[in-house]
Amino acid sequence: MSMSIEESSMINADIENDVTSSHRNLVETERVEETTGWIKCRTVLGIMGLLGFANVYAMRVNLSVAIVAMINSTEPLPSNDTTLDVCPTSLPSNNTIPPKQGEFNWTAEQQSIILGSFFYGYVLTQIPGGRIAEMFGGKLVYGIGVLLTAVFTILSPIAAYIDFKFFIVVRVLEGLGEGVTYPAMHAMLSRWIPPLERSKFAAYVYAGSNIGTVISLPISGWLCTLDFAGGWPLCFYIFGGLGIIWFIAWMFLIYDTPQKHPRICPKEVEFITESIGVQEEHRQSIPWCKFLTCLPLWAILIAQCGQSWLFYTQLTELPTYMNNILHFDIVSNARLLALPYLSSWVAGIGISIFADWLLAKGWISRLNSMKLWNTVGSFIPALGLLGIAWAGCDRLSVMLLLTITSAFGGAVYAGNQMNHIDLSPQFAGTMYGITNAASNICGFMAPYVIGLIISDTQQTLGQWREVFYLAAAIDLGANLFYLFFASTEEQDWSRPAIDDLTVSAPVESLMYPES
Image 1: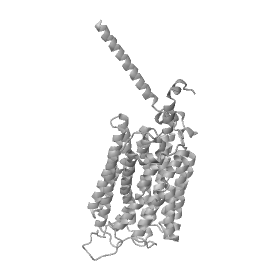
Image 2 (image 1 turned 30 degrees about the vertical axis):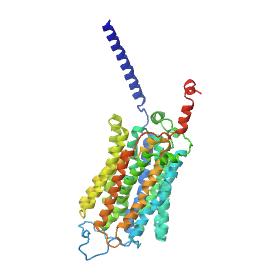
Image 3 (image 1 turned 180 degrees about the horizontal axis):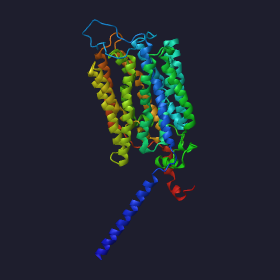
Image 4 (image 1 turned 45 degrees about the horizontal axis):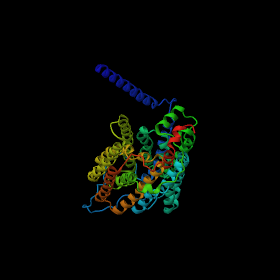
């Protein structure tokens, strides 16, 4: 009798295992995508989003190169004082293109104001852009944002010739247009992209900023050497025109949600809905007080502020550093400056794919994954900037440090960039607008502070070391805050309206599912 009981128990256990295994296989089978067609609609969204960010960043960063050609002289005044901490001006080069004198006599302080003016407008439309995209869809918000950026980019040379202040106003208006792009795209990704694809898609789409920088910097440097149309104005006309062409394609190809797309495969809609749930458009008010007291949201905000300070130190000031301190000519300057953004783009995609693979395997939790890659994306570039501070006049070491360490900066796409959606898919666009607005204040704060540190008459390596030390310290400190307080749990205030309905009538919903 005892043997029969044991055999019966073993049989029951086998049956339970088979049922569990079958259930697991069934669940896994249901989650496998069976989308037909040669390309998925969310892939089209990713491609168009990438090209959109490439366009807006090309229109944003071209001024960093063009301003070197626009001003009358960027070289420091000659000095007979051999004790100054400066690099020798002689640089072996095969480039025979003579430098052109610019048309504007702007001081170092005025240049810092111009470089930062874009961000005065950029931070103002972050939160409204995210909220409007959440309520009415991100297609028009994102598209019109890129269109306005393109229009004001085309107007930039005209404004510069008219008046210094008018040029600043146009740059501010350009920033107002571009300010909606990131939060609007974040709101769209929360409705289109399944959780296990988010790191990869964030890398593809947001890395468009690196692609735009890689393309814009060398092309802008080359355009500045031309005699046609004055040279540097072409940087604004060409990239602005491309932005208008992109807008037309965007309006024909992209839709706010999978359910609204007329040409999408039903299997893709089914897969997306099963992965992220039905994304209904609720008009509930924003829980501003909850945002203010949400420590994980503060962790994202502070982390992005630290990374932005370092990023904008490189983006807006390194062309000046390489021209004034390392004495690269404008063509070499732009071509070499594109290398760090190229390495960041390639490595960012690779790291994000690897991060999603680790998550799919279950070898690391989502929270630990974000903390790990956010630390990689902050720590190594900060160390690289410290290395540049001590590389001095060794131009080869400076470029190697920039290129290698910037590659790891792409890890932020698997770090904090998609963390908002974890905290609240409902308010992901608004929250991204808040954190991106705060972080991009560094876009005008960093050039302003650097303008205070750097001398207008004789720039030295010691002054620039202070700039690099400050950027590295801010970045590393911000990452520590993220490590302590980041979270991937959806907050209890995320969907209050839905939760109230669920709690108020759970029995009725089970008894009468069709009602």
